[in-house]
Image 1: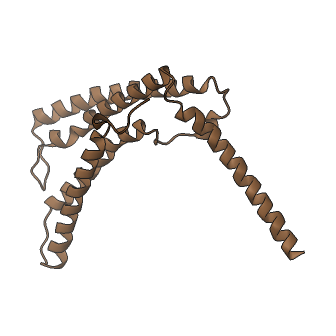
Image 2 (image 1 turned 45 degrees about the horizontal axis):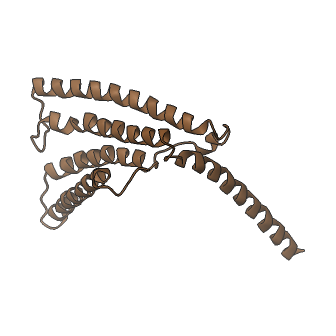
Length: 190
């Protein structure tokens, strides 16, 4: 089973928390400077934007690890239970292939920015630093997807299989509760 509490499985959490604090500081500084001291700056808005992008891309791999990414669970219930782990594994393999392409072209983009010497307007930060999150985050997604694949292979990661069934059962339970509420409402009126 994937030990989500292990230090190496919490790296994205720590980076995400740090990003949120930096973003909170920069935005608070901007608001205080603008509305209290009647001055403004461009660096805090730019820093907040870049940190938000970094936060989003870093935490995607955390969602993969915790199986919290967007998916259609009800569609899994259509397939026989023995096929579901294979379908999840296929989805992870497709995600890994996609991430490999993004890493490849992300590195090319960084190299182009280094060659051109592009810098951001407000922070005067080299743009290759800003864009470096693209390959970094996708390498993390590959690592987390491989962790999930190993979990599926050894039979420890069956969340998708169980969640698909639970989603269908929950939907059926909700329909039954709605029907019983309607019947109870009709009986109370009659």
